[in-house]
Amino acid sequence: MGEPILSINNLTKTYALGLARRRYVKALDNISFKINKGEFVSLVGESGSGKTTLARIILRLTPPSSGEVIYKGKNVWSLSDEELRWYRKEVQGVFQDPYTSFNPFYKVDRALSVAVKKFLPGEDEHVVIRKVLESVRLNPDEVLGRYPHQLSGGQLQRIAIARALIPRPELLIADEYISMVDMSTRVDIVNLSRDLVDQYKMTIIMITHEMNMALYATDKMIVLFKGRIVEYGDTKKILKDPLHPYTQLMIEALPRIDKNIERKILQKTLDAQKKGLTESVRGCRFAYRCPFATERCFNEDPVLEEIDKDHYVACWLHNRR
Image (tube, rainbow, N blue to C red; front, side, top):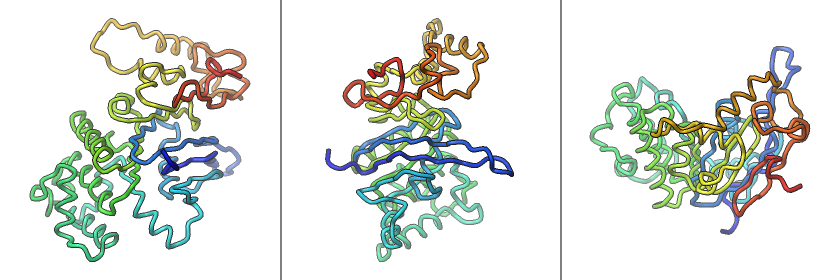
């Protein structure tokens, strides 16, 4: 596979809390993973798991407390001004709320025009804009010349993706970009993302709390819980055999047609929470919710270990040490 396009090495982000700033919370806690060129990767987890913090660090919007973000062999947080201009062109982001991505006082054309002037000076602006809109399955004649409030959320999100594609990036960070549109539009946007990966060999990190969309379209999956990676690997392997109880819980909680399905992990997790266990544990962060937790889980933090080829889990149930 060659050198990975993106490597996250021992990344930690700590925030100080309160006016006195004497309490701290780790949004990300010593996480590491690698992504190869042309992969569609999902980063899944509930709210507060650290997904958006990771996206902002990769996009150079929020500095890490420690650790490295390596893109094509270069440390993202040690780039020169010239290298930073290169990085801004190669790595683009699409965010959750399409309505905040555009100035309501300007037509959507302006955001596309600014991107062309900045990243593709000298190219025919009209041709570039029409072509990129068509690539995200929009009719340019239907959306150009309109203000954001005149378009649907799905149309605006596609235009946001189109704007991100203008620099012809190699890595796209999509942070909850399907959460504010209806289900049919979500599927369309995820299918569009899949096509971008397959046709243009783009690398996409889809950050989402929707396990069903991640299982449906992505090649690899990273499962985050309270700032730690609990499972990571090939999406098909994780769907077939989820190893971490948290991953099992997320998959079991998905809507199912068969109403009488027995949700064993979900019920056991609820029973474990009723015991009143504290969240302040020295070991695994999921221990207080885990129906299989042992004394070791509360006192020792499990390491991420490869259990099968391209399938890693941080859980004492599977750890061989």
